[in-house]
Length: 105
Image 1 (cartoon, helix red, strand yellow):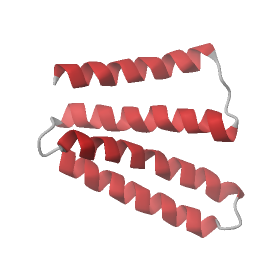
Image 2 (image 1 turned 180 degrees about the vertical axis):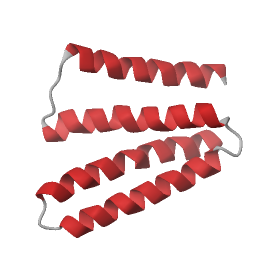
Image 3 (image 1 turned 90 degrees about the vertical axis):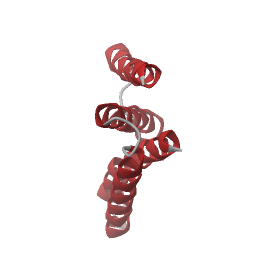
């Protein structure tokens, strides 16, 4: 159950930078800022629950890894961020590190 909490925390971690990006262009600026605050708070709460059984270093690395890789993908798919070999390699290294931390746990 703790890994599910950590996965949810990581997915919610994607929400706040996306919400802040949407607030830049949207007519509903405060709604997106509110969305960012809510996803940030929920992400922190699920990280708190996950850390009851998962070591802090592992939990934090997995949480930020999911958030970073997920935000990277959202940026490419929806905001037309640049796709470059070194950027993709960097995200693959993040994902590889998260997988190794899970295996080593």
